[in-house]
Length: 605
Image: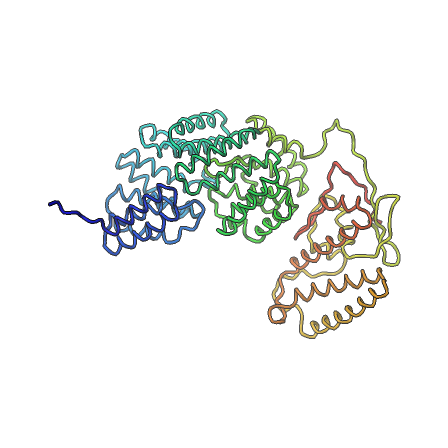
């Protein structure tokens, strides 16, 4: 009688994990591999433990937090003496760190994995380790190394039958070709991908999604529905757990180019939800850009605001660095956030002329020279703007990027042979008795003074010249540039604020009862200013709040005052307000940048 050997708990868990991975249920597989690792570690089963952690690494999603996985991989690596297994573990550890946005931690593991694999002379293992090396050398400064590694991977896989290794070689070669916009190489790698996909669903997913990338690069959107459907079907057949993100991006970016705002908005919302849930900066930047394409500048502005402070400067210089900055700059330009435009442009400046490719050649995001040209224009450097614009247009022409070329060509100063647009004469000037004269020439109206009118007047005197908010406040009264921290207001001052607010409420009630509209405006402005001061001065529990810098206080004050002034002007003269709204950009620095297609002559005195 033959004895029946019952499978161990570890074997059962590993079998279930492998089945879940094959079915595309990555989260389930990850939990099963983790449980198997615990069982194998307790039983001192190194082979099973190795299989469990390598399995967990195989379902780790790009861009997500790896949790305990790096520690698990390293623990097994430290106990392993077999060179081939060590190379596989080192490659997995390198990819794990790269996918988690800490590629620099993975460099030493990837380099050692390649050396071990080459000593062993196993082409399939060499290909796997070169793939890991490429993942950790994916930053903006690694282009030459990346092209060299991709060429080595291409050469090695020419002698490898393993389909997955050949697929990864094609994808890396396509990525490298796209980054330098080598059109012939792009078409060659695309055709090779499509041949791999003829009988293999996994390769067909990549072939369909990258074909749409190329079609959109070339300005073709009519293939989007067919290719998106093909990619979605292939992903389901192959059990690709994270393919939904790529399929969603396919629909969103095709909609952005075709002008389908509803589809673009749906994609932006989905991208934003995942970005905020996972804290993924690059997806937050992409969502902001997609909201601008959908025409929802408020949603875009809210996401751009999350990149204020040190966020951009602290971004890891990994495979998403260029893409994040490019998308943030696109969105900041659309919403007129001068601070983010300036910082993003300064970071991107050394990478002038680079093509921006989403990781794995998922999508083409234009040239840095394109966004840098528009940023230079917004920041007042017309000479640099024209040079960058001409450079980007020439490249777009060379590669046949029609949509990108047309978008950039439509931006900028009018052509010399176009008729000069009519100049409208607008008034914004102080008058006696605390009034201001505002409106279109021949149809002006006296209005009561607002603080924002004085700020507007300073900006209008110096078009296209950025002025700090602190200087604007100083131009209308003395101000100190303070950076030290301390109590903003003492309790006596706070009591006086509250007492005056009580008086104002009584006076407002009286003015409303008498329908004294002129008095109401002044009282409401004073009340709003006092409430703003109290909000700034009082912290939790009514305690005096510590001060931030005077520059930040000036930014808030100027933004609110200018916004209130433009809103008031719109009730008097909509033409004047319509001219100002898209031309004004406020922040720590502010600028009036008139549209050359709608010139205005200002009467300010």
